[in-house]
Length: 76
Image (tube, rainbow, N blue to C red):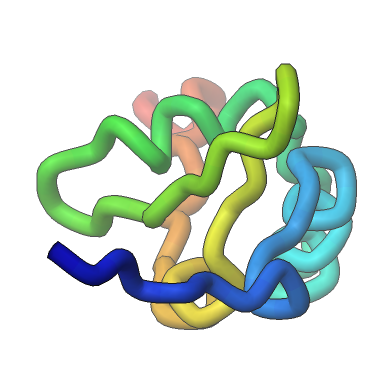
């Protein structure tokens, strides 16, 4: 069985991916949030294991939409 060769240029580290999403959304996105995105059922982000780090697919990150949390002060 042949393995598909993955280009590492197509993947970002957690900190780079968080900066990319922060610039895209216009607000701060924490690097820890990316693990939630990778395990999401609706919009999964592909990952690649590189030694002891996870890399996140750039193409999937471009497609992801992140909704802003509802502000609790506007509930009244």
